[in-house]
Image (cartoon, rainbow, N blue to C red):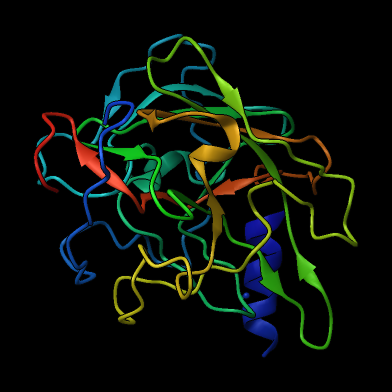
Length: 254
């Protein structure tokens, strides 16, 4: 049960094709949801599962590089943590807790659960290196390895044709190559670490060139079924998505 394990660790010391991508503005870390009190326990509120277009968004807000709308959320068995704060909990910047702790500002997908999010103002486009960052809440055990819970990442420009990043959730020794949920999240709204810089933000980076896609408006995350499960906090725990290389929908500068 990820968020509960993370809390224990804390207590124990957890574009269009051919268009040139435009640089993103400097992010100052302010003005967006910073999550909930770490002492909040999951309310277990069940959301509508299996709805093809949930249409849940963050309302009117400035253009930013983070997810704007949930189109589908299909929780799996032992999901539930974070649903009392859904959908806001998956919008805005990551709320990382550092190398050795896992954030509680997350939504647990449960075994085999899936969530699809949409960028409505700033789309991810293929540029130099990493184009998209996915933030979960893995943490490094003191003197040990990374406690990770993995998800497969798929991207789409139109919401119909999907491109899947290769992911091997069984290769622990290799660091679960291609999967999301493997690197601790270092960026948080109040620590000055940019959530848009793959070199310092933490999280897991994805390059659209690896799946042959020039632009992505939608991102789907699917729990691999090979994680920790129990209670209401099972499986992959989503914190945030961030566009590294992006263009506005109207083609203007970010």
